[in-house]
Image 1 (cartoon, one colour):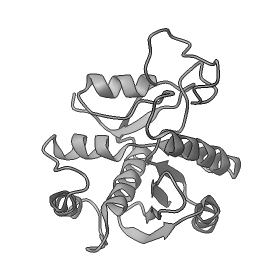
Image 2 (tube, rainbow, N blue to C red; image 1 turned 180 degrees about the vertical axis):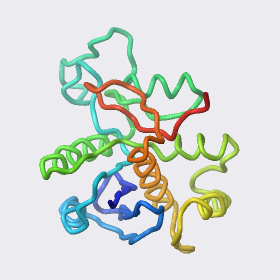
Image 3 (cartoon, helix red, strand yellow; image 1 turned 135 degrees about the vertical axis):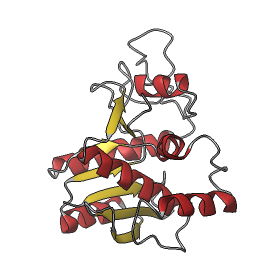
Image 4 (cartoon, rainbow, N blue to C red; image 1 turned 30 degrees about the horizontal axis):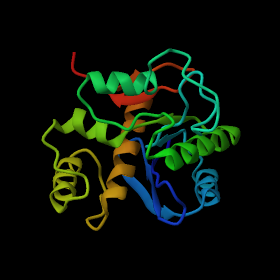
Length: 209
């Protein structure tokens, strides 16, 4: 079985990355894409058992959109995001909250549209969060994402876990690999989940007990 990991950008004008990982944690391919059509075609060609996307894939209960002009509101008063995001915050893992003030609104909309499209094609889709995955796997000393130190750090620590890493991959490629690995763990009963089904659950490597 093949697992796809997607490092998704908010806009199709910037290249996103998709990684195909086999059950032995070996990279079969790593490709970039712009339009959602390209990812849908890649999935249809690869026929993965699971697609793991590193972006919010649902809205909080009560919200039909993230537009400030709409009257929709949180079903639970004084909430500021989805349950999964509140649980991450309690764990000390930073994240962007899904609400009408979100600075990643375009990414959220794109993630939701992709989930719906890929599920409509018959694929199982899960939400992952590369920052949370690397915090759980490698501790809280991970360098800032966009630094050169971060790339070196991640490549060194991912190498024992993933075969076929590209030495030239960028931070988005690292995110795609982290998402693919989280998806692979999910197929092997190696994950925990946060949140609830109605808002969308977040898949994480198993948490320390």
